[in-house]
Image 1 (cartoon, rainbow over the protein chains, first blue to last red):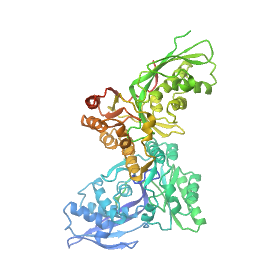
Image 2 (image 1 turned 60 degrees about the vertical axis):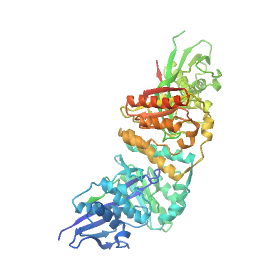
Image 3 (image 1 turned 90 degrees about the horizontal axis):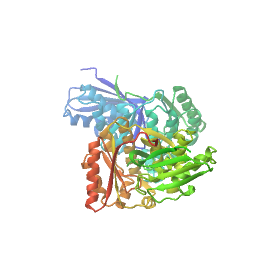
Image 4 (image 1 turned 90 degrees about the vertical axis):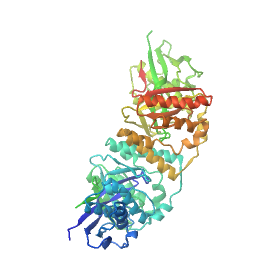
Length: 308
Length: 308
């Protein structure tokens, strides 16, 4: 047969404090791997899933569904392809696990078929894949996982996505406490109304964050990384959240907030030493509360999904 | 005695569709003029006001109050200064008339005294001056009138202001219909709560607008210039608003919305011909409704307040 294609799609941090549903950035690790190979019998099948309990049915699997939608679109659903999924990141962590699988699935098949589409064109299929897990049509994890970088999704409906500049030296820290929060619970705590004053304050911070990225103005990034809408409503879902956040800031981070729907917490720093120190300080707070946690420190991933 | 100093501070468009209370840009015209001269008797007095009925008492006059606060701060309130104010723009037009006067007042005195402060440092005094007219501490008209350009006020409290890039070719059109809307009425129609979904949509548009400015991406600017929060609530205060807006867009404008608290309506275009055509199309709608209006077409003013 053939050697097949092996790809990696990274974890991502959605919301990024000031961009609920419209901002996300990619991490260098963790992430998911997908391997695809041609097979003789027609049709796509998932032959192996390691690292987590996931359905093998294409219609219920984010990677499988994303790839299947793509194959339908290009009229290649008769091509025989087998897919192996290697989950290398936790579910329900707030790190875009299902988004990474969806991205890896469709990206791998596109590579196997010698790129009938550009990366950017794969976005809608990956979003459709993630929608199976999440129920919602949004790209704030999928777009950074696929494209890399810090990404604005101006409009989720039309997938109007734009890369933001990444200042040299910007590092991300993510601490994943091993507790479970369902995305549905995390959405349920949110009020569907926002005070106008908070909406103005958050808008100023979002705009300030973007200008800060543009000018590599770390002080401005730091002043701007302040979520006055979502974080206060979700903080109670994560034990010791404010202690963890303060620990990150005291260790030198520019800002710290909840990654996606949580429970992971992210921080941004202007160098790797502070990013590492912030992670250790955050982990120490969880440890005191007898909560196991994992740290991931990396630059902002500029590549997104890659082929090995 | 002495020849004195004559300055000009321009009108400005606040809110800019997607940045309620946090965005503004400066026009080249109209604007207010202030002339200041030394006099022998100590203290600041307003000796002449033309172009509008305004109080001569410093405590009640935006230009006088801004200048007085500045003189107090630098310990020069014994210096004898006379001030002439030439209002050259309408009150209550939504074009930052009181902001322009406040800026001109403090900027003129700073020039007369050979610049004890930088332009940027004058901001707080101009904001204090405008506050007399408006009641609120905010810089979305004052900052562009003083500094020029398209300005983000990340935080009004601390006056954390930042210039945004202006794409080459960007033109502003303002049409001022000669009807009266009180700022208080315009604020009163606003709900103090915003649906979270609208807050997300507007945030995406604000971010898209900034990226569009950054990359001179006029299509993105156009897609982003869409106010889903404030405009729908205020549109009813301006007769034929949506017809006027549609006329501007059909004439080729990138976007169109209410300037500040109204009734002026602004449009942005990617060249001067479209800006002029948009203005005429907008004016024609008002004319059909028997409403007199004035058109102002200009580049984004990059200088702000200037000395003649």
